[in-house]
Length: 181
Figure 1 (cartoon, one colour):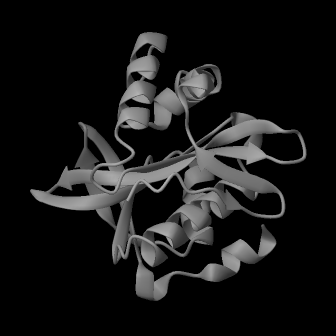
Figure 2: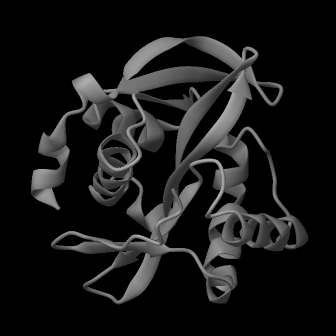
């Protein structure tokens, strides 16, 4: 856990988030559309900085992985992916998450980056199952879940928001999504 792993595809690079990424991280998580679809709601710059510090300080605990996704063509951050434990329905589960600049929504980047994060979770951390919560109106995240062939489980309340719960198991993981990376 917390290997500080770097994952490279043809068009993207996943590297661990650092405190130097605060500007990009803040722009993504304080975007009004991100807040609309996130169970955390609208996030302030102060909360974004606290989140980033928590992420960077906890790489080596509890199977916590979080990568900055770099667009290799433009040499810039496109978004973020990762997974971490959450308690849902009184059970600790591993939740994967995705956050990208809106210009990447609808592109292949979120699904490919998520694919790499899931592959790492399954193959390196030996996590058998990941879950994700998706806002019903977040068409980009729903498309990502579909491409990943995540299984729709049910509507669920998470952080007070009614969301769609998806799961992805190691035995059903579709590595084909990575072939386009």
